[in-house]
Image 1 (cartoon, rainbow, N blue to C red):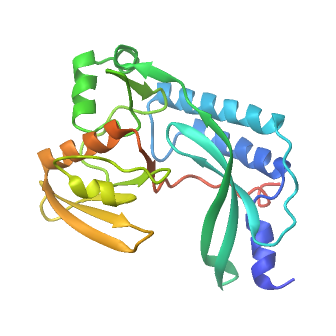
Image 2 (image 1 turned 30 degrees about the vertical axis):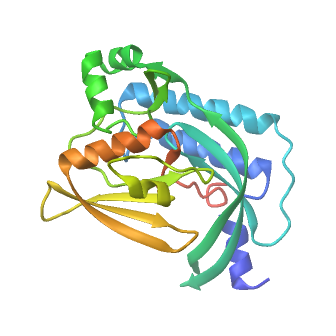
Length: 255
């Protein structure tokens, strides 16, 4: 066994037991609520969602992965948790650690969603007025909210917005197209990245990428324009928020 395979076998998940052990440690980390810190009510709901996901994994029949470079991975996506079957490629090793790797999600095997709240329920949970929640939605501040007819539903795992702007990546799902008169280029892209200019807090940069055709473009936006852009993206219901960085337990280092 060469060093790449050895490190790969040490670092990733290949059995249902691996997944459950990792989830046990992940839940412990969620309860500690260190970084980023969430409100106590949101932590409770995140842990509740983990419990639902663990129950789904326990009910499932998952084979032991013996094919080299294939592994299981779970992702907490803010409003759901997914278990994916992944394939690794282009593995680079430096100082006896995997320093870089290309990972492809080949299949989503299990997906468990959180509970959703009405505007009024979400307002009560965070002790604000419903009008404040509607303002957050209109300004694109609740990135996991979804339109349900004329009403909005918000995940019980989504905290109230923090001060300032947080960079975001939206991934357009299922080859969908977002239609917008104000932002017509949305229909031509599958990745939307929004950043704040560090030298001018009222200026925002939006990168619009079509990864399939290797086309990319850039928009410079004001604060009000970026709020309208995010509202348009969220209201479409055709994207998910990507780029989540989550705690990854080392199950073999903790066994």
